[in-house]
Length: 367
Image (tube, rainbow, N blue to C red; front, top):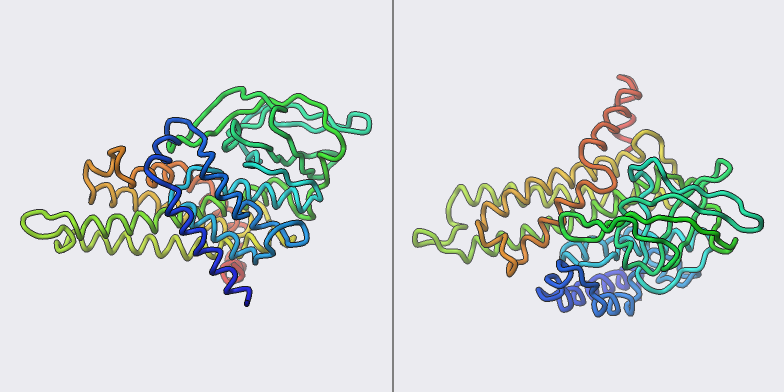
């Protein structure tokens, strides 16, 4: 069986799993703060959290771009669990030669605001970690948290196990997904800290996180398009389906264009992620331009798609029984995580200005 066939089978299996398991009841309970244990068990049994991990380290040995496609699939179903974060955490641990534990994993965002960022210092043969990790996705539910810390001018990967942090502030994003501030003050044995892979620093990890959120947004926008087209074909107004009205058709065309643009941008970012993971450069202030452009473009598409979809659906799109709001609330949340549209746009602007007139064309074509 060829690698492409294997990748396709895994993607199809993941779609069926989420279609069967991400039920309205699961989404409702997640909104109320309940951890979806059954859904996570099914995802973990398939091995999806290890999709980015090399085969020799216990993963599938998938191509990185194909593995990242799982994030897009999960986003299209508004899956209420940290699959993307677990995939990234497992890849970071495996790349640093640290053990990858079972259970849901997460990554502390490397650029979360706060003056008391985690600080790593030597403590005899081990380490001392202190500070606060801000807005950690699913922090209260994680079996382990992975964070990047600087020590002696080099980035290090740190693994924290459940019970080694205190939830200083339990937060949520607009979608109701946990985003917790974790207070850290503990000694760690040497086996829990290792130098980060070559080239991995806060900027590149921030760009990787932006890629994952962009892929999730692309999947969610595609599903929003499907729901809206379906509703416009079924909802009858003034004696004919909404989809027969020219103004509605024009809006659906705009929505389809936004979904296509977001998908193409996310694909480009996935390829740039793979280059970063292989030790590629991440020049300041924005990192790889495909990732910057994708996060910004997916964010723009999210805003337009949410507006059109809720206009088309009317009040029903906001009811608890309808699937639409589970997607749009995540889109509004994800567009602000790992840098919002404005921050990535500023970074692109700085990069263009720094390149100058003679460097603009090479900068654009190299991306």
